[in-house]
Image 1 (tube, rainbow, N blue to C red):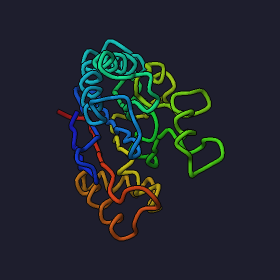
Image 2 (cartoon, rainbow, N blue to C red):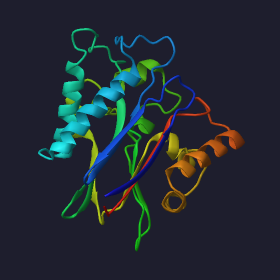
Image 3 (cartoon, rainbow, N blue to C red):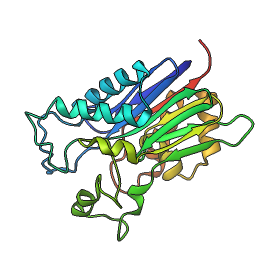
Length: 247
């Protein structure tokens, strides 16, 4: 499997995205930054958590012995164990991350998506197809959400799910299989091209296929500077990974 990838920090001091790949599999993570002044109960921070979860999930996928939900659940459990004695894991604002994983199978490419990361089948003979988990967009009452509502709905039935301290979240992910063995994985910093700026999924897929991940992120930054952002920070961490069959 050949992989092209790029990742660029947004406005934060550290890039809180993560990614890894190996023979026939890959994933991206996007750490969730708490609003200013929110006590997360963790002395390590989001970037540390993403690095830890990246390492644990990479280990699980490299072993190839578990399903994607089981692999993610085990990685969440081990990441939590790494700071259980030093941090308050019962805090609902404890560091967390969105996840998109893909792995080759005999039937094609299986995927798992948790929260607003994106798994993309670029499309050869069929239109490009994107999968994301949009439950965060459908919380009660509509946007803008209060901090209290987001806290109450995080990793709760009827709310939305992220990879944090509760391994049960892994079994709430969106799952399926793409035909073929080409895929792309994107964090939401790249998906602004669709969500904020109205570009079509096929247009983004074609651009990524032809120009590559670095150029895709440059396109995002150009759109942000030209058109601004409807709330939130101007530049978010952005990660794109494109995988194709081959040595």
